[in-house]
Length: 396
Image (cartoon, rainbow, N blue to C red; front, side, top):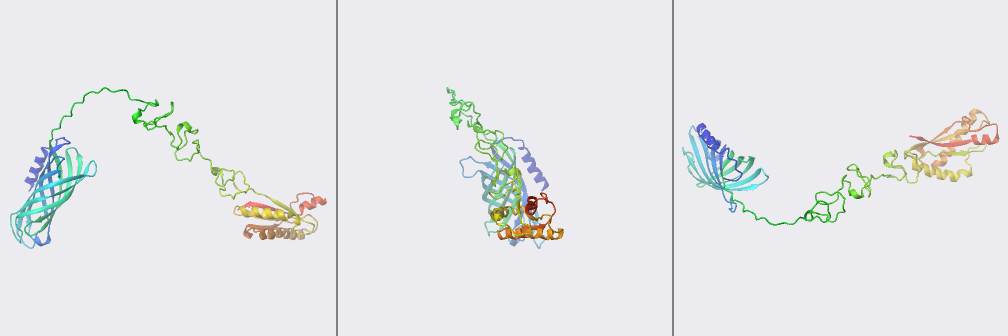
């Protein structure tokens, strides 16, 4: 077996250095295995051999004729000490289907003869039909890696052998190439470039480009920064890729909540429409002050409309701020009494805001008594200013 393998490989090596893309023959040393049908009383077999492929003209149905030989040595019969050799001869037609530049799928079918040296257990020499599929990979112009699977069916009683092989396809015998007819020089006229953009009319997809405009290989005006605006109309020619631009090719400045602060600077990007905001795009902290009569915690009628407007504002910004209602008094009366009175004034305003629709959980009432006067308690006007409730907004 070893001598036969070496002989096959040496025969193939004589053609290894043939460097022809178009060739007549293909020699393939190969090795593989045979899985016999279970009723044949045979063990699985190692097989080795080779094939010669003869390439046919392109106008034929098949691409190649394969003449092949596979041998298996010293194969044991099951449940017996008997052994036999197999010599299998093939004649197949091969059809090749290109998959990629380097790979192709091929199908084969044909007939052959199986010679058995020791015919036992209903195993007899005879003819067979075989068919199969294979894959061929081009390692380089003069070498292919091939692998296929074949089903061998005996003529006499239809027994099957499954054969799989791997081999190296080695082309040789270059096909003579026909010499191309000599062309007769033909006088030509210079190609036209009507819009003078450097691209001839026959290749120009934009034949009316303005002079002086940079164009691509198709004669169309460039959009150098790939923002969808042609260079001649792009007032911001170096906009980064992926940035949204306006019709002038400049970055779109967004103000999603229409509060006058662009999104990139807006720390409160979903401010309700109509709410005044600060420079960070957050609702402005509007303070409301209400004054009270001496020793009173009842809200005066003059503040009713103001409180309604302010309550509407608070409902829009209550998710941004905590609402602090602070009550104060003047210095008339004891400090202890003034402390209670200031808290009553704060609670009176808190209750009114809740009735006007402000979320109670957002409002905190506090009384500070006569602390923190805003005017002198020595005058009537000053004491009136100190009798107050101030509604402040604090960040949550």
